[in-house]
Image 1 (spheres, rainbow, N blue to C red):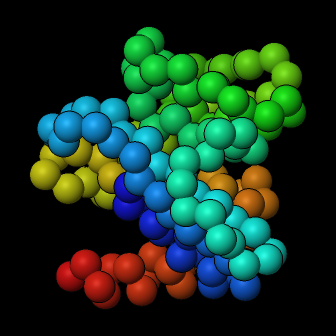
Image 2 (cartoon, rainbow, N blue to C red):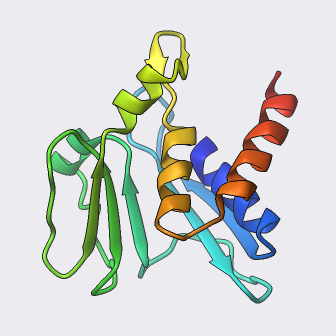
Image 3 (cartoon, rainbow, N blue to C red):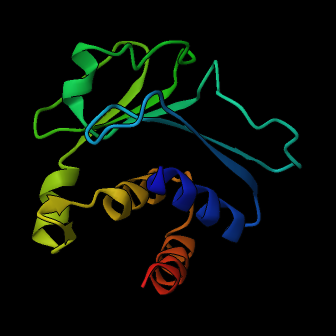
Length: 147
């Protein structure tokens, strides 16, 4: 949820319109959570789940055993997976990135667990979804609010 909120904030800093919408069932620590982010050049009037995503980010590849993360993804859509192993999904641009390794190497750890929000925003900037300048500005602003 935090990564989705940060992505919406970064897109806003890039001059886009954005909404972040979490979706989860009964709350329990470790349960899969799905968040949706809409980004557009025009005002958004929809705040809901996204049925035909252009991009899917999978922060925990283990969830793919129980959840169809590709449900509805558009042909030619982009998939980012937190993985140390190369991945390929026919019909989609796929990026396998060791987000966990990056977080641990950079000391992005809270309560013993890696924080993947910053590394995934870096990947989204690298592939052109948002700008790196806005990622840096949003991360700084978010840290001030959290601390």
